[in-house]
Amino acid sequence: MSQLEEIASGLSLLLQNLKCDFAEIRLTQGVGQSISLAMDQVDSISSGEVVGGSVRVLKNGSWGFVTFNDLSNIESFVKSAMDCASLSPSGKSGVAKYSASVKNFSTPFVEDLKSISFEEKFEIISKYNDIIKNSPKIQTTKSIYRESTGKYIYLNSEGTQLSYDRMHCGISLTAVAKDGTIIQPFHDSISGYGGFEIVRHREAMAERVIKIAIDMLEAEPLAGGVYNIIADPRLSGVFIHEAFGHLSEADFVYENESMRKQMVLGREFALPDFTVVDDGGIESLSGYIPFDDEGIAPQKTYLIKNGILTGRLHSRETAFKMNEETTGNGRAIGVMRQPIVRMTNTYIENGPYQKDDLFAAMDDGIYALDVIGGQTNLEMFTFTAGYGYRVKNGKLGKMFRDVVLSGNVFTTLKNISMIANDRQMFGGLGGCGKGGQSPLPVSYGGPHVFIKDVLIGGKQ
Image 1 (cartoon, one colour):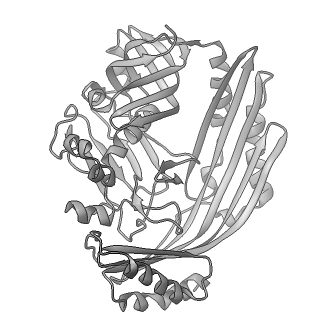
Image 2 (tube, helix red, strand yellow):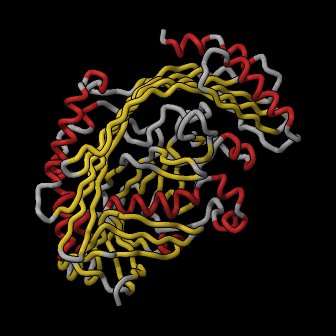
Image 3 (cartoon, one colour):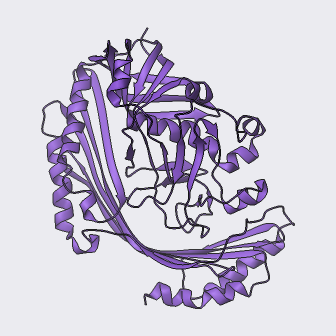
C-alpha cells in the first residue's frame, strides 16, 4: 500500500459521518518531467513532484472548498471546508444522486515510463528535433517531450472510494520556415494515457511538420468568398469540439437564456447521417477518464443522434439543477481546482460515404486541413485551417494558406451534406481551456465532412 493509500484509508468513514449534504476528498501524488529543445539549444529541462489535495463540502445548498499540500492533518482541512459551507448563506446547489463505487484503475502500457532513462527520453526528442531543423529554410524549432505519472484518489460521503494509477506522455513539434519576408509556422502534437510507446516511431510526424511549413512558403493566401469545403478529420474534430461541444456543456446552457432556447432537446440540427458523441471511456486517448472528478463513471453521451439534439454534458450539480442524468463530465485540471462541466473525447461519428465520394461530389471548392487556431462567441465561430487546396472536378490543385472559416454553428451543421467513414481522433500536449482552468487533456475527431456555403475571409 502506498503512502497516499494509507492516508486515504482512514478518511472514508470520516466523510460518511459528516453532518452535511455531500462531501468529497481528492488526493494526488506524482512526478512530472519535461524536455524542451529549440534548434541547437536546450530550451528547458524540468522535473518535479506534485503532492496535494482538496476537500469540498455541500451543506444547506452552499459549497465549502479547501485545498492543501500538507497530507499529515487532513481532518483539519475537512473541518475548515465544513466551516466555509456553514458560514455561507443557504444556497440552491445540490448534487444528483449516484451509486457508491469502490474500484482501482491503472493505465495500461507497453513501456513503463519509469523504466526509461532520462537519456533515452532526451535522445528521442532530439532525434525528432534534428529532423525538423534539417533545412536551411527552417528558422527555428520547438520540440517538447512531457510526461506525468502518479496516483489519484477520490473519496466521498456516499461511500465511493476510487483510485487511479495514471501514466501520460506526449510530444509537441513545431517548425518555423522563412523565405525572405514570409514566415510560416506549422505544428503537430500527440499525447495520451499509456507508456513510452506513445512517442516512439514518430519520425513521419516530424517530417510532415517540416514539409508543410516549407510548402506553405510557396502557398498563396486564399481569396475571401463563399466556398464549398471538405474538412479533414482534424478540422472537423476541432469544429465540433469548439463550436458545438462547448454549447453542449450544461453549465453554459443553464446560465444562458438565449442558449436554452436554442439547445432544446429534440431539436433537429443536421441531416440524419450526423451524430456527435462525447465518450470519456476510450482508453489511451488524452480525454480518457476511468471516473470524473466527482466519482462518476464516464459515459458515451450522444449530443446529436441522427441529426437530433439528444443530450448534453453534466456535472453532478448541473444534472441536479436541470433534473437530468449525470454523464461523468465534472472535471478539473488538478485537485486544487473545483470540478466544472468539461468535455472528454468528443467526435463526429462515421457517416455512410467513402472519402473519395466527397471529392467526386465537389466540382469547385476547398479542401481545408488541420487547425492553427480559432475562437467562438455563442453560436458564432472563426477557425483558421492549417492550410488548404483548391479542388476542381474532384482533383486537388493549388495549395493555399490563410484559410479562415467563419459562420454560425447551427447554419453550418445544416450545411453538412456528406459524411465520410474515416474518423480519426487527435489529442496533443495542449488541451482545452475554460473557467480559468487550462490545459485540460481532451481528444477530438471526426471523419472528412462536406460542408456547403462556408464563408472564408482573406485576401480579396
